[in-house]
Amino acid sequence: MTSIIVHGGAGTYSPGAEHEKALAQACEAAARVLASGGSACDAAVEATVLMENAPVLNAGYGSSLNLNGEVENDAAIMLDDMSCGSVAALHGFANPILAARYVMERTDHVLLVGCGADAFARHAGLVERDQRSPARIERYRRARAKLERGEDIHFMPRLRAFYDELRNDPDWDGERDPESGTVGIVVRDESGRIAAASSTGGMMLKLPGRVGDTGVIGAGTYCDCRGGVSATGHGEPVIRHGMGRALVEAFADVGAAGAMARVMRTACDESFEFGLIGIDATGDVAIGYSTQAMSWAAFEDGVLRTFLSHPIPRST
Ligand code: GLY
Image (tube, rainbow, N blue to C red):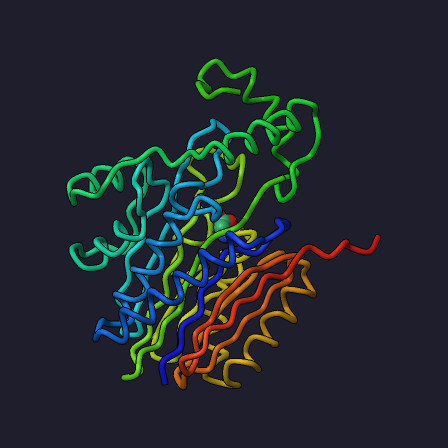
C-alpha cells in the first residue's frame, strides 16, 4: 500500500485555501513521483521542495524571521534504513531540504550547521535566494514592536528580559505571535520503503543560531523500519522528549493510531504545543496535534484528503 501524509504546521494561525492548495499539490506531486517509479526519498524531497516554494508556509521562501530579521532554515530527511542528513541555521538557500539530502548522500555526517552548512550548500551548487517574503517581514515588524513594548512572546517568556540585555550589549550587531508552522512529509511506497522529511524557518524572533526540532534527528524528524514521523510546533519540548523517535517506537508496540494516542496523552498532560504526522510499517497513517490549528493532506489508496483545523478559542 502507498501512503503519503504532509503537514503545513501546527500553531495559532488560520489555515486557508492557499494552505490547502499548497499541501494538496505537495501530496499529489509525491504520488506522481511514486507512480513513475521514484523512491519514497525522491517523493518526500519533491513534495518538500514544493512546500518550501509556497510563501504561505513557514519553510523556504516565506520563512519566519529571527530576532535580527534574518531567515535561518532547518531541514532534515531520514529513510527507513536509518540513513539521514540535516542542516540547521542555513542562510539564503531556496530549498534547504536539498542540502539535507546532499548531507545524507554525499557526506559521512548527519548534521551541518551555520556557515559550514552554507559553504556546503554553495559547493553543491544549490540555488541561493533571499527567503524573506513581504508578508513575513510585516509579521516580524509587528512581533518586534510587541517586544519593544515590553510584552511577552508566546513560547519565549525569557526573551523580553534577555532582549533588554541584548540592546545594551555593544557586541550585539542585530537590529534590535511566534509562529511554529513547519512543513513535513512521510511517505511509504508500495515496496514498504519509508521516508520522512521536514523543513522550517523556525520560530519568529528566535535567537540567531537557535536550532529547533526539525533538523534534530529523533526529535522533529525520524524514520526506521518501524515507520516515519515529522513534527511541527514548539520545537524545544519536541527535542527534550525525542518525540519523533518516541512515536516510531510506539508504532511497533501498538500500531499507528494507538501510538499517536499514547504520545499525544503525554503532550497534553505536559501542555506542549505541537503536532505530529506519521506512517507505520504497514502503511497506516496517524495524525495528532495539541495546538489550536494544524493543516495536513494525505494520499491513501489513491484518494486525496485535506484537513485544515482552525483556531478554537481557548477556554479561560
Ligand atoms: N518546529 C519548528 C521549530 O520549533 O523550529
